[in-house]
Length: 227
Image (cartoon, rainbow, N blue to C red; front, top):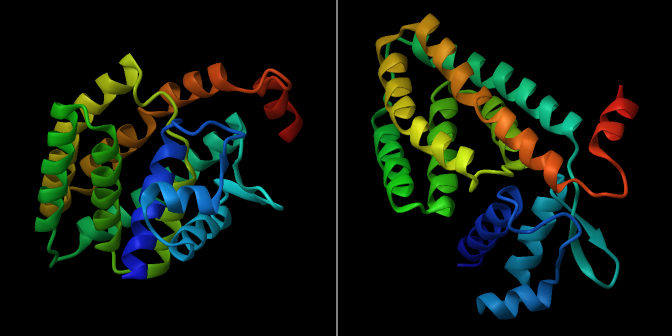
């Protein structure tokens, strides 16, 4: 029971942060969040601690957990690593003689329904399940954990913008095409599509992140200092 509550809290707070609903500097109080959700403080604290380990928030003594501010460099690094690891997993899956990817179709259906109803939270959850399922089919648990950790650290700022909503619509047929190519074993077509599928979000997130960056330190300056 506690584990299920913890997962529910984790999904909600993670979605709020990565979608930009909870902006950098926002605070999460364990007692306040527990009261608003009608649960005990234990699953809330455990969920927030896991998000802190993932780099989305940081503990603040006697206050709770503060949402951290991402940088363009961090975002681009995440895209680079995601592309590298997710394409590697996809090649393994496509090259297998035996594989069962039927569950991915259900997740793709959920994504299509989320886009149709403009349910961004459902889109995020279904998209996460889809890519976890695809990566997990490579049968490398550590690789799956690494890919999901990278995805969970990425801020999806701009996902509700006009460009973000258009990109969601474009992604619907891509998910079904990914399943088809992975099933047929067409490695080249699969990697080309998956690369575009991942990278198409980058300019949308970069633009939104640039717009929401703290005025105290221009995001361009952050990138320059990190080189």
